[in-house]
Amino acid sequence: MCGIVGYVGKQQAAPILLDGLAKLEYRGYDSAGIAVYNEKENKIDIVKAKGRLQALRDLTGDGQSVQGNIGIGHTRWATHGEPSVVNSHPHFNKDKSISIVHNGIIENYQPLKEKMQSRGLEFISQTDTEVVVHMLEHYYSGDPISAIIKVMHRVKGSYALGIMFKEHPGELYAVRKDSPLIVGTSAEGNFIASDVPAILKHTRDVYFIDNLEIAKITENSIEFFNEDREPIEKEMTTVKWDIEAAEKGGYEHFMLKEIYEQPKVVADTITPRIDNGKIVLNELNMSDEEIKGINRIYIIGCGSAYHVGLSAKYMIEETVRIPVDVDLASEFRYRNPIMDSNSLAIIISQSGETADSLAALREIKSRGIKVLGIVNVVGSSIAREADNVLYTWAGPEIAVATTKAYSTQLVACYMLGIHFAKVRGQIDDTQYDEMVNELNALPNKIQRILGDKERIQWFASKYSAAKDVFFIGRGQDYATSMEGSLKLKEISYIHSEAYAAGELKHGSISLIEDGTLSVALATQPALYEKMISNIVEVRSRGSYVFALTTEGNYNMEDTSDFTVYVPKTLPCFSTSLAVIPLQLFGYYVALAKGCDVDKPRNLAKSVTVE
Ligand code: M6R
Image (cartoon, rainbow, N blue to C red; front, top):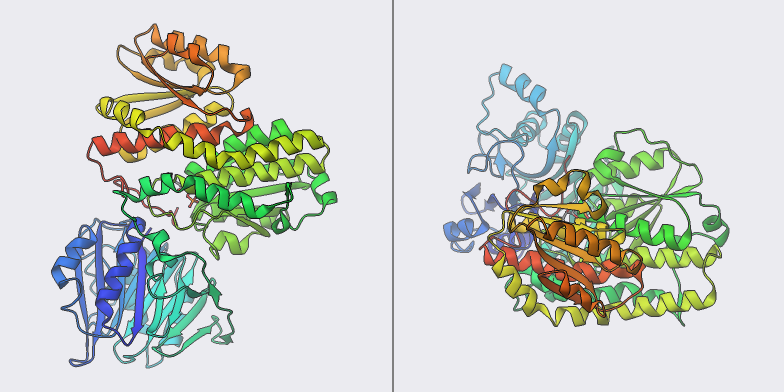
């Protein structure tokens, strides 16, 4: 929800903090601030600004006006208290001798705050975070770590904290529980950050801080402690992402860049797992016997990750013949689900930090059921807590609206499906080879669709004033419709719904009136004629129809107003291709409306709180 960065080293801290925050703006962008220790004056300087990071850059001359070599920074996505200077981070105690940045939610802040207020302490912000800095002051008697541990034992909720004590000028402290935080190390100094892109310019060598662990960082040393103050040895990881992956690289928006990266990242996710025409999924750590013993698969995620699960259900049930339940993590975690003990649960998450998905994972593990994570961010909480992880190799995804991570999650599920189907004897060698060949062909087919973007761009600009858009489809196309509808609404703010086309006449068709735009997906050969009937139904009630179908289905033009074709593929892989024009449509509508495509209002990339 918020982004944290910290630096201690030889360089001036403020410009480094601002650069790092720029890479974390996807996590929150309603205000930002930095705190830097000023050695000459022996004080912590704090500068904060409401609005985008640029406001803070302007206020500090890109950080040049703030002196000092150690500091912490924060970009905020407001939860407690409106976006304002006073509510923005860093927060500080009365004499500004302690300063903190926080990502997460302190759930019991209200009683803690009331207790402190009853003792006469004044709070200046409406945030849950401020309580932490006052508690640190309360418990501090010269030893930062013991104060931090005492606070850890009193607060409930989630937190990643960056902390500075004026009395310990060369030291930076970090601690986390259920919110991400990493430590980076380089010759020019050491860093903390919510996510790797914030420090990629300086280093790819990182340590992952685990839950309830504390890091003490100086220019030349990094130490880790557990909540009993015992030192912990940690292994350093070298992240493979390169700096270009976290830059716009000439594209107007990260979203467009990420849409265009899809052929590459889909290939990156598939290719290393195919050896001599055979799918090799060593990461699963599952014997053939275990795979044969699975009675049921549960797929759980939020937002687009949930939509991947819906598409995967069609593919897996059809190919593997195992029943698949797909759940929204926020629903699953509270409904006390009845689970088959011989089952496999799959948690899908780009960030690996989504609070509801993480809670669902823990719920499943507590029932003794094996969890497979399909995760993009290496070392994230879901990746670490799952029994096994199938990493998607999408690279850093910065735009709030997911595109390339979604596409890599899909192919990861397809690979799982094909592998399981083979092991369980549901497909023969010929079918297996056909599926693997078709899987390998997807990146080129995605590339071909991207080559035809102008028509979609033209159509999107024509329909950017639409008030309501309906996405309809059957079978796998229904799952794709849900993702297309989400893409459009989250970045263009146009109201949009996805309906199973067969359901229209049970209520929602009454919403169709003259000029309503319907996006109709018809890529499933077995359901094509039925979709034609549905299109005729909405069109005869005045709807304008944008049809999305497979090359060869040229009679669609007799029934629709605007038709986009995607290359032929196996029907079970259709989402991988059909989603591409829908991503482009959402992007170009938002662009035509002048929306902030990469940072849509009210949203953050990674939802680490409930
Ligand atoms: O990081 P995750 O994959 O767990 O995130 C899940 C959703 O928050 C995410 O897919 C969200 O729906 C996207 N903004 C959709 O574009």
